[in-house]
Image 1 (cartoon, helix red, strand yellow):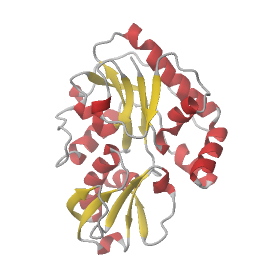
Image 2: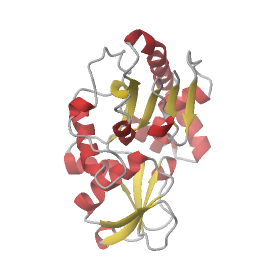
Image 3: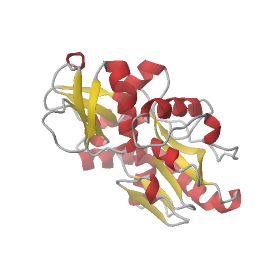
Image 4: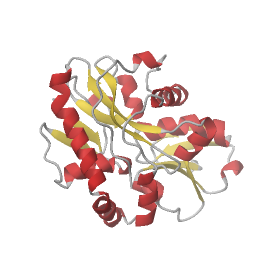
Length: 269
C-alpha cells in the first residue's frame, strides 16, 4: 500500500508537509505532478483530481477523510484575450492541467459564459481564445487580457462548491489495514494547518505569489468532505465528464460506502 498525492497548489496543505519533511509517513508516500487513475494500484490510497474517481470505482471507493473543496477563490482559471462575453466559439487549450480543470471547464464554459468549445487540446494553438490554467498560474494576474476563476463560476452557476480533489480508498482493505495510510493523511493535513504561516511563506517564495493572495485562497478551502459535498461532487462529474474520456457516474451510491471517519480538520484561522 502506498499513499499517492497529486502535487498542485490546492493540495499544498497535504503535499508540502510531506516534501518539506514536517511529517514522517508510516507508509510509502509520493507526491506526483501528474496523478491519474492508471497510476493508482488496487491497494493504494490516493488523493486524486476529482474525475479520476470515476475510473477507479472497480477497485476504490470515495473517502471523506480528505479532499479539496474550493470556495469562492479557486486555483483553476481561464485566460481570454478579450472579455468572455465577446468569445462565442473557440478551441479550448488545457495548459498543464489535471482532469479536475478539464471537467470544471467543460461544466462551466458553455452554461455560464456562453462559450462553445470547438475542440479540447493540450497543444499550443493560436486559434484557442480560451486557455485553462491550474495551480499557481491560476492565482497570478494575467499579463494581458482577462482571467476568470472557474471555481467561482461553478459556485455562482450551481450554488455548489467545486470539489477538485477526492480520496480514493481501496475497497479490498478493511479499516485496520487502511489505518496507517489514513492517519498519515490526517497528520499531513494537521501539520499544514499548524504551520500554515510557514506553508504560505514557502509557497510564496517558490512560486512568486503574493502572500495575501495565498491567505485568501487557502482560507476559502475545506480539506475534508461533508455529507452534502457528495451531491456537489456528483453534479460536477455528471455535467463535466460528458464528452470527456471519463466514464459517466449514474448516482451517488456508486461513489461511496459507509466508513468510519477520522477526526475532521481544525478550523482555519
